[in-house]
Length: 391
Image (cartoon, rainbow, N blue to C red):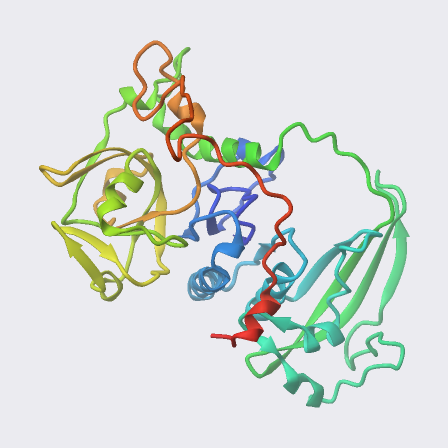
């Protein structure tokens, strides 16, 4: 089993999902070449954990709970985020303590952004976003040497250090027995440190945003007929599914949208098709039979869909989705995140009129021009939260 915790660079699912996937064959190639159906996935609703770190941790807990209930006898590989500073490092500590792994593989480079080794001393004293600091780890009888390196844990294998060369120059590997605290219990694990002493250019052809777009397009590939026609069918020519307003509720995480603007936000947008517990869906605001969820539901998602159109008179949603009809009957929640609909899908039908698009604009109207990137703004630091108190 493969647990995807990197919501920005997913391997088998669409961006924005924390997912659990069963891998039964060797996988080669970039992510968009091997999109697979997940055993369980939860929609975070974005590609940046800065939007809601609490929701991110809750999604991981939800998927881990399903794994322990249904697949606890199957080995689990966890892919964590590549962000390993500040908030990203705190969430990495949470992931370790929540999953209780038997092996931790840590790749390190000779750069300042590399975190310290995730050994006993660091995991016992580091602060997690959700788990805090495990101060009780100091009293479990683990003595640390004066130089800061873990002493050998009784009954474990001694530390092994050797050099290997398999096409990567100057690579060292260390195998170290460690111990850490989780939920008041002590867990033992093996820390495998792979020290890459020289960075090699991978000649990556695509940007991260382009890889996400390709992964999303791959998840929507099942919308096309089989075999694939010479010219793919555009979204405007596909027959949508119909969902009445009375069957589903709406939730928009990370943003506060006025009730009067919710339908405008949904139209021509990418949504996650979810099934939520009735107790969560009951906490809603109702406006003209449109149910808007107040709380933040953590629930199962079947996949993504595109809101093709909305009929406010007959109170219907028209959705284009690769999700099968049987699963669609169980959908009772539409979650609108910050993952945008790829512009390639809107530009398919170049010969005709494309809804919701305009090729020539003077940018005189407010909101019609693209947003400019601001790289002089500091990234959010979770330590700022301490000044006003943690939740």
